[in-house]
Structures are given as C-alpha cells and as structure tokens.
Length: 301
Ligand SMILES: Cc1cc2nc3c(=O)[nH]c(=O)nc-3n(C[C@H](O)[C@H](O)[C@H](O)COP(=O)(O)OP(=O)(O)OC[C@H]3O[C@@H](n4cnc5c(N)ncnc54)[C@H](O)[C@@H]3O)c2cc1C
Image (cartoon, rainbow, N blue to C red; front, side):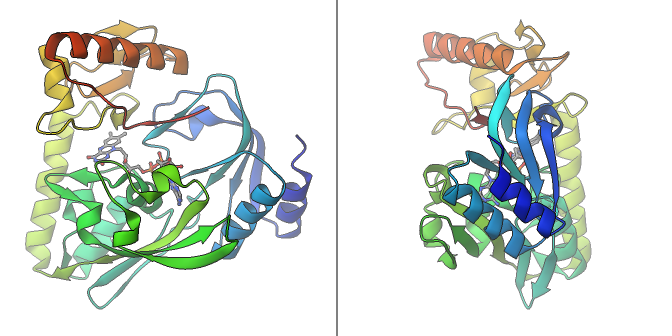
C-alpha cells in the first residue's frame, strides 16, 4: 500500500510521519516489528483529517497513546499507526481538568495538584496517555477513570463528525469502554470532574501512591503493566502466584518475580513468546483455581 492520500496530506500540512516505523519503539513492552507508517498529528484538525482519510481510503490503522497497554505483531503491521503524543494540552476550568488525548496521566495529576484539585491522584505514575486511560478505564488504588470522567470529545469515522459523549455513553466496565468495540470512535479530549482540596495533602497522596508502585512493580524491565483483568472478587496476580508461575519464562518473556500480574521483557522477547506465555498461564491458572483469566493488554496484529 502506498498511502499516497495520507502522505500527500501530511506533506501539504508539514505533519510529522515516518515510514517503516519500528513498532517496538512505540510500546513500553519493546516488542514488535514494523508498521507501514507512523503518524504524529499535532492538532485536533490533523488528527480527525488523518482518521477520515484512512477510513475513506480503506487503510488499516490503529490509534496509539503512549503504548503502555499494547503490543504489535513481530512482523509487519500492515497499516498506519496514529500516535497521539503531540496532542498533549492540559488546562483547568473551575473544578474541571481538560486534557487532549495524548497528554500524560502523570502530567494531568501534577496540573490538578498545582491547582489544588483532588480526585486524580490515583493516575500519578500510570505511564499512559489520557486517550488510553479513557478507553481502558484505567484504575489504581481503588479508583477508576470512570469515577471522575465527565465527557469526551470524539471523532467518529462512520458519521464523519466530531461530537461529545457524556459519561454514561462511555459504557464503562472493568478495563473496557465503548471504545473497546467501536474502533470508529477516537478520543480527541476528555474532561474530568475534580473537587477542591488541599495542595499538600494531594501531593502527599501522589507520592504515597508513587512509592507503592515503585516497591511493588518491576519498573526496571519493559512491560505493559498487569497483563490480565481482575477476575470478579479475585486478583489475577494472586491466582498466578498461587499457581506457582512466578519466574515462568518463554524466550525473552517472563512472569515477574516481583509482581506475578506483570509479564516482563527480560531479553528480546517476541510477540510470539508473549502470546504463548499468556496461553500457558491461562491454562495452568484454570487447572489450579478454576478461574478464567482475560487479557487486559491489546494485541495489534
Ligand atoms: C509499569 C506500568 C504500570 C501500569 N499501571 C497501571 C495501573 O496502575 N492501572 C491501569 O489501569 N493501567 C496500568 N498500566 C497500563 C497502562 O499504562 C494504562 O492502561 C494506560 O491507561 C494506557 O494508556 P496508553 O496511552 O499507554 O494506551 P495505549 O497502549 O496506547 O492504548 C490502549 C488502547 O487504547 C486505545 N487508544 C489510545 N488512545 C486512543 C484514542 N485517543 N482514541 C481511541 N483509542 C485510543 C488504543 O487503540 C488501545 O486499544 C500500567 C502499565 C505499565 C507499563
């Protein structure tokens, strides 16, 4: 595929793109092969134009935030990867924090803290973007994005227009949302309803969460965080640990000794290593505890 319609548009608008991009560099797992083209829209207009052109020309595409919950196939992902990292504006409006889809979650938490707004402390240290967190309903320390989300501005490639989705229309569940099944929808920006709080208390909570993360998670290895969703009433990491799977290794992919919910890339892991390890974990956990583990991480093939 020559992506002429896209590259013509990108050249005209002096937008940033890269052909034969290494997908391993776009995801925190550092696993993958290449993508035909990676695109980095710098404005909301460019983002929706790129989505529209891709749809109209039948190009396969994926929207990627910070790539901390996703991984690509080992060979060529025969499509375009639209990376949102340049759409990173954050501002507050009264008790609302508004952020573009590519904004860093930790930066949002810092802006909220500086403005004395509480409710966003739990996202501090989650390495993803706002778009990824809104799609995945990111959660930590007993709180979820669905608790604070007010609305999102989205671009719909089927309707070919931009509109606002209210909180309920996000159809949230555990690590899922309306975006999980409707790939025609892309998050442009989201608004979060926060409340007034004490800046120093907010700062203290953020640093407490940060310390908890650094002591419990294997942050010295590439990973995509917890691989499996939390089964109702249980913890995936506990089930994996109790099944005796800590340290289980396939190629370069290993179940972390520090946190059994994480698979880490210890040395040049491939998507094939990772997928086989995931299948083995699911089978053994099912045998030992009867629980069905479901993946949280997204495979882009
Ligand atoms: C060390 C580590 C710790 C982690 N800790 C946590 C944690 O505590 N809690 C937690 O919930 N997660 C955690 N994660 C996982 C991950 O950081 C979060 O799920 C995060 O919200 C994903 O954001 P992202 O931008 O990296 O998403 P990506 O991996 O880029 O994308 C995830 C999904 O969202 C879609 N998407 C992204 N942006 C858009 C958009 N603008 N429009 C439409 N679709 C979009 C992608 O297509 C993909 O399907 C952790 C990951 C790591 C590596």
